Image 1 (tube, helix red, strand yellow):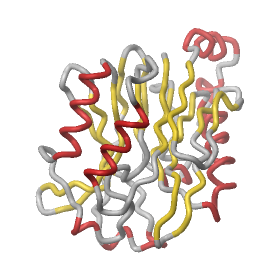
Image 2 (cartoon, one colour):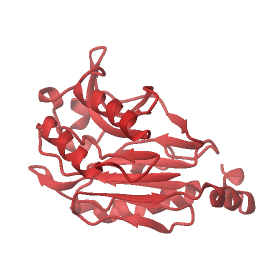
Image 3 (cartoon, rainbow, N blue to C red):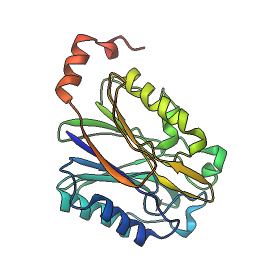
Amino acid sequence: MKIALVQNAPEKGDWLQNLTDADSLIGGGCGADIYVLPEMFATGQYIDPSEVVQTMDGPIVSWLRSKASELDAAVCGTLPVAENGSVYNRLCFAMPDGSLTHYDKHHLFTYSGEADHFSRGDKRVVITFRGLRILLLICYDLRFPTFSRNRDDYDAVLYPANWPDKRILAWDILLRARALENQCFAIGVNRSGSDELGSYPGHSAIISPYGETLIQTDGEPRMACAELDLEQLARFRAKFPVLQDAD
């Protein structure tokens, strides 16, 4: 299973340019099975998203579906979605057969005011794609180990993020902690660049179930790809059955 971390630097509000830039970063792809983009990869981060809110039949979701078909792979990232009178920070996971699964951010970042403008998701979402079981989470969810707890029902966890430089040490440590305690691959994709809310240093990474860094980016927009060894994961879990001993 090959994963691509697509770390872009979105211009706030310019979704058309941001999608063009993401196209350039991905190019013809790297043969990955899943391409993961950051939180709000096409709109930039908004506390009040009313200027850029999308629908599920809008251009950003359409782009995700189109790229998934073009690359014969899953393509995912988050965007602000209006639905049934509420707005959600939604991770959309588009698959090459045209199907799409989504997860709405459960832990809203009260410190920034996100909870004043978004509604909280109430569903835990685990999907299976090409044999990989994946827990879908977003950014601030990383800080909450109980919500991320592996119930022996996933092999990898995704965290698309807008994580600022002033708290990047927490990002690095918590990604490793989630991988170790859940005996899984932790996949974190952070944006780069800056906006009026802060600067974003990248540090997108894949951490193995052993806590090893398989790949980590610097602060420049780029795509980075790495293989997940699922057979090694299965052997590790069989030999060292941590999940069976969980509370």
